[in-house]
Amino acid sequence: MSSDMQVFRLPDLGEGLTEAELVNWLVAVGDEIKVDQPIAEVETAKSMVEVPSPYAGTVAELHGQAGETLDVGKPLISIARAGAATVAPEAPSATDDAVSTGVTTSPEVEAAAETYRTEEKAGSGNVLIGYGTPGGATGGRTRPRKASVAVVDSVAETVVLPTLEPSISGTRIPGKLSAVISPLVRKMARDHGVSLDAIEGSGASGLIMRRDVEAAISAPEPSAAPAASPAPPVSVGAGTAEGSVDGRTGLGVSARTPVRGVRKAVAANMTRSRSEIPEATVWVDVDATALLDMRAELKKRAPHDTPGLLAFIARFVTAGLKKYPALNTRFETAADGSQEIVGFDGINLGFAAQTDRGLVVPSVRKAHELSARELDAEIRRLTAVAREGKATPTELGSGTFTLNNYGVFGVDGSAAIINYPEVAMLGVGRIIDKPWVVNGELAVRKVTELTLAFDHRVCDGETAAGFLRYVADAIENPGGALADM
Image 1 (spheres, rainbow, N blue to C red):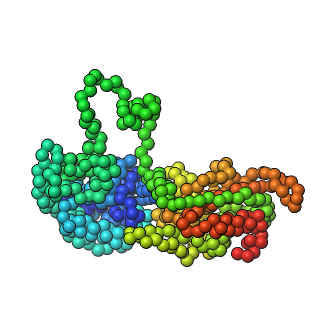
Image 2 (spheres, rainbow, N blue to C red):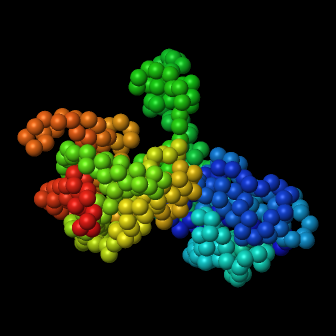
């Protein structure tokens, strides 16, 4: 690789994530770009963000197409230094492939890769959040990378790999050096029940690459015995592609939708919540007539500056959590099996927001310090950025308690799944006219249902019921509640 060529690899996201989907390129080959200029839009499991370039120069090659999922550390874009002649991109070598998939076979190379990830974060900052890179328009990084094996992009490096033992009939000799180091490749094989010992690596010196595992996954399973007669043209199991026949139902498969991005993160989070949290649920019907009347009066005085109902309920929730702090905690289990309940000096109030990319939970940081009007402004702002796919990982992952207004979907109640690793969620149903006894007489009132799902490990029903009743009483008597807050 020419020393005039700079390769920017998809950086460590700093979110515990290992991949991102390339949504759209914002530059093309031949374009002149500056430092911190957005070059692509990528979607992680938490948000869709623009990636700024840490280099200035001419775009020489785009590594990937829209819709492709890229691993952290894989080349994203090649940029010729300003003033350098742009040359045709070199064909990737086996060494480049091994580096891009994270495959190494020595502690030195692993240490170099870790150095790259550390420097990527230190040198470029939170580039996937749109914060840009330090150094302004200097035309490059504020400090050079160390000349690490298999990591440096500005010079050609050769990774020396140990010779692997030969295999016999596709089975690797037991006890010999494993030909795969990449955690992603190992996890893929483990998740699909593929034995790495039975795979011949296509990489340098027999390294098992990601493509090798994918080929093993898609390969048909050998039959236990020869078939007596030709099988009918009906696929077995769930089918392999659109237009195939589902073996269980006998119906044609009309579509297959990959679970990725936000939907993948939501699925994993809900699964973990259900498997780890012993949740319990309490609920109560609430007369919200007084709250609606109070807001109507405020709206007459300030038509364009009146908080929404959710903001008032959020204010009641933060006050309730101060009174019942057990519901504003996190339950942690250490590696040695010891457990503890972690309390917080403050409240980051999350709220469920439906977007085109799925359900996300942005959080209002330090919500306990905000008034109803300030809460309303922040809820509106976060909802807007979440629906645009621009919410940062901090905005989406720092909540301590979640408020879920599913009443907007026209339902009364829900058996909510707690937003792991939080320990409770309050749901608000639709507000509708219902018969209600007032001062011994039947009347029509505006009624809603509050539902609280809570982790029974952190508190008992008395605490949960006390919190729920506190919020319900505040809704029924909002003037008195706000006066005491």
